[in-house]
Image (tube, rainbow, N blue to C red):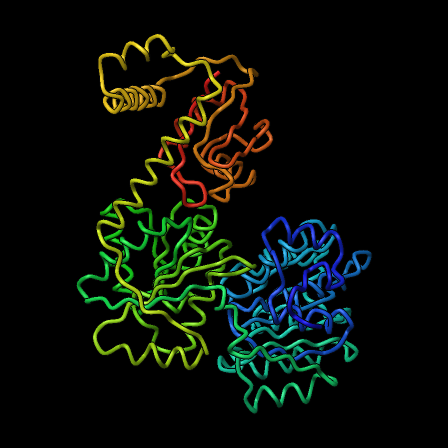
Length: 525
């Protein structure tokens, strides 16, 4: 199939799957999705050679979901992954795709988590199992996972699994799966061991290879910045101020540097958290959940945990240190510019590191432009524009409401004063009014519907689920208690019962939704 102008609707996917893709912002299929989905839908074995950021999970996940027989209450597909992070990531993606496919349950099984909980989950009609080879083998030995009804087996990042010593486990699992199954294998590299498995277990496979020039880095604006070591922290903050991303990830080569940078960012008022190998898995999961829901804006991480970072609408990646391997660069920047969206990636270059940039460009067959560190004047200009936008938002919010300052008062003020002085005074009045509004306790009747104003809207990529999720996470108010939500371009309105108003205003103070500082107040009128 010709890749240009292909839409998901052209790939034979069901309406329920297309609805989920649209809801989660999957705008157009990537090259590997265009090439592999038709083959897998036809039931053919496939060998896919691709790297992170090409959309391979959807490549096998979408046709796999379409193949499930919901009337058969058995495990029908198994996906093997090298790490628990990738297994969790793949499971999360599949659950998005199955949102409107009734009865298609997905379960992740991996070490480090209670096996009893997994056993309980396996008894609840799971159709797709995603797991690490070791834990899958454990369930097979316990007879808590039966593979005799499996019709599709996926090996995701097969080269990584072999590098980690899972070859024997993989072969044991493949031997237990019915021989009439469909097998799909994805790998960034193709060595003799990988080819050995494909010859032994795949039948007349279709080979799909995404060349470097087809990697989705073409959706990412890549910029290198020559920076002095001592200026790196300051440059990170300037880039955040300049781009004002909803979510950003900063990659460092060492845990020490991650911790140092986090301390610097937090001391300067930025909402940031760290992620590296010394942080326990349960805590990592909590941090990632908070990052995805927009509770903080900046995640600072090492390459060790990079595979576990799977976030929608990641706008900015900053390589604080040049990665130690060229492949890591593709893994890092592949976190942004997904699902048809544009992304931006900055890489700091110190001294003689320029040669490393040339090596990366050659490896990834991409172009990294040379840029300049944003100046204080540029940052000031951006902040001033934000202030203008905020003022315009106030004007837009209040222009249809009855004003406390009528035309007669305005005319008298303008007779005696310059318009700039009047404007400053009115802005001060508005600001003081807002501060008083924030401090005030309201006495609304229970059940009375009260409209609240939020200073975030469509231009901040806010959706109803984001507002509901944030309020539910930060207050004792559940989503079912909330009323009508109206999201406009720059702001939103939500109706809530009167008894919940004070709790929402208090608990949501200084919180963020999708990385944006949110201000909630009782709407005028």
